[in-house]
Image (tube, rainbow, N blue to C red; front, side, top):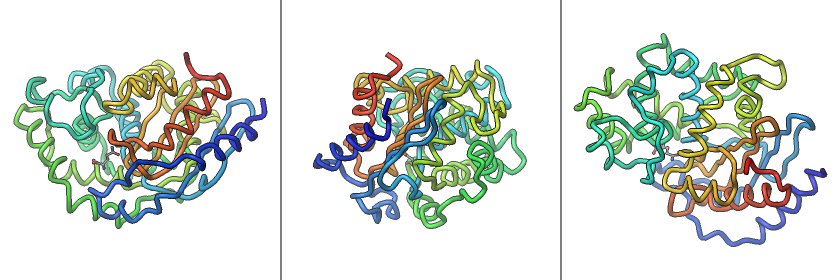
Length: 304
Ligand code: GLN
């Protein structure tokens, strides 16, 4: 199949669409991004790399980092991790506090803010220097040690983290947060402020398509049993209260971030990423979702 041709078609179709989405502004530094950026990268196990547009420009990965922090925590711990965070779709916005009250401080899943904050708490408990270990993990799965955070985005989110602080405080009142709130927030905001390009993110996500192994050097990063679980969580929870819609339209496990990125995988076949900053009302990249829908439609190749 001529993947580059399909991607060229998707580029033309996507550029033809007028987005009604809005760039995230609640982290002021993210509001400065050019809304017209558009990139896509497809990394196939059998045939390598394809892409278009701004595929090599780095952007803020934001909540896509939640998949990496979950992987890092699961690589150290076993099922006891899931005593503190559930694996059910939330059906609520990513930063919602509502369910925590009647779920007694146990977040619905690790890919909403509450769940990712519990994972950050776990990483603070089990790792010596969690911020450094988090970056090293990304370096290991991409083979690229130049990937780092954007300090301006980091500082910008730090100033406006009242909601994440309230999630942490509420969970701490139920006994589900063990460390100091400032330390956990610092790690969480750090992981969100990492910048990667579509190509780098597709390379990182290859471990989820390739049974837990890097494709370039065949290193087993995490067991295939655990990858199966991470993919299941991405499928059911990767897009907050739009996880059903993403499954319905695209049909791949994946994860979005408010920087406008989406990373998704087809187990055994490929990792794919798209970046377009304007977000739909659910906080997912509007054109990114469209481009991925076109990919699985034009290739006939989704998990369903
Ligand atoms: N850093 C962001 C926040 O916590 C991440 C949210 C997202 O990408 N959905 O609000």
